[in-house]
Length: 58
Image (tube, rainbow, N blue to C red):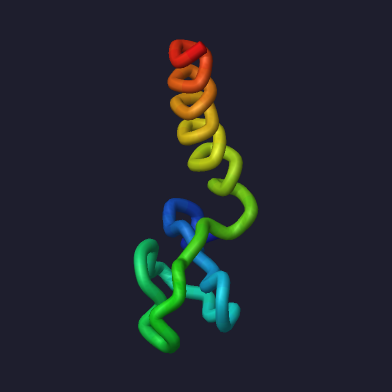
């Protein structure tokens, strides 16, 4: 019954606009961030890469 299952929603970090845009907010030009659910996936991947880089530098 739910049609909006595969569509991800992004929220602008500056004005709060919600929409399918995943880069730049069409309203204010701010950064669009994934809304809650996908947030962990994006931050988790970036965080792991940064930790590995810091560990090899030591």
